[in-house]
Image 1: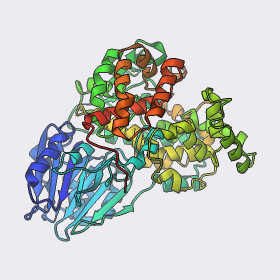
Image 2: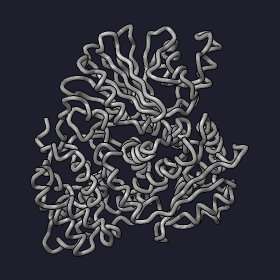
Image 3: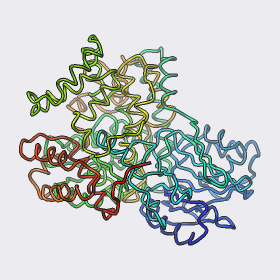
Length: 634
């Protein structure tokens, strides 16, 4: 786990700039830092290192291949690098390796097999920048699911990239305006979907993608080397034909292999344990393959509606892990909130970012690597949203779309139901033209939330321009939507940024390529029955943990943010950020709409998740020193 940076065509003050970029992401790699520049300084790479595998100088970056042709900066882990290393040696592509790092293996594989073939062989989480000094070509590569971040774009016409968007914003002369066309998407989702960022001309490289740019570094070309959509489509066309028990057998085998690979490190390794199905399964498989007690970590809250720490402790005791827990309060949240804008670098508003940061901070006091159970809901139909959308769409689809759209437009904003949030939401959802559209509208909650930003134009993105009809089951289609956008742009961002803020590496075994591809072959009947999801995953877990220990309502990894905003000093903080005069001066948001939403909460108790979205946006604006004016985008 590290951080990478670089730029092209900036020979003046190149060293000061790359050092500043490295310093901005020091938390991603506090163990060491390195820089490299071509002879003419037209290509410059920077790296911050969190030493996980090969702690010696042999693992330092930027790193050159043995021939000197390639230079690389790399963030992440290649879990099957030992197999790749053995192949290189067996085929006599390499006579010996200097050290034991996966970066060195990666570089020699690029030399021996080429970039495309090497990446197809790699299993892991990674963001890679590679320069071929022979051709001058720079290649950026991001892992299949999007565990590791990689931003790129242009500043003053010069190509730049970084693991942290904040590292780009500290470049001399950076004045890229806010891209106001992303704000409507942000206020629907609470995050900015790839490939966009908060800034014009700065982008996120999509998961499973490779960017190539040749001298003079003006026109990047992006290709897809792996697609979760194609994996889902292939899986549905080639379904698993065995019994549910046989499916559980194969899933257990694949998860065991993934967990085993991801436990490899030259530093202490542990795991988050939230008491849910996903994390419990990962911890169970870790303990089953470990000769010593696995370290497990959880946080709890005094509010029983949000607390699963007692259940986690019971599971840990049953599995025999060395368990650590921390109970948090509203004061703990207050202390974290001012840090959030700096941690995420752009507006990001999944409120579970707070407990994720706190559990990461506690975990880092004991280990350097922590495994996570993320991915189970999206792959094995765990969210209640999936059957809910399926059920609602089943009732709606019998009525002609034209009629539903007419009724929706007639009712939305109708004075008779104007103050009834539930009826307004139902009227809004009535206008959905497909189950995917229904899911998208449900994220927005109600039409008025689309009016928060003054700029009403919006970028097209994955949900708009990719049909999901290849998958016949509505639940599979919604799960794929989440795997393409919500999971990489929300869940994985939350985990990566929160953990890296305290220099903790996180690994996600359920996102192993083989596990993901197998999950899409599993029949829905093995995943979901009635309101119970993740059936086949439960089958695996119940081989290690008694069923009765897990049968309880799911609480999720959340905090009582609405209660805290009403009852604690967070209210004063929120009032200051949502001040009408301030918002009008900024000229980006609709001050009247913001006040309506806030007062509807404070006066009438009507909570909208968009309130937290607003607060995180305004907190980010505050950190920028209000230097942006919200001018129109290109």
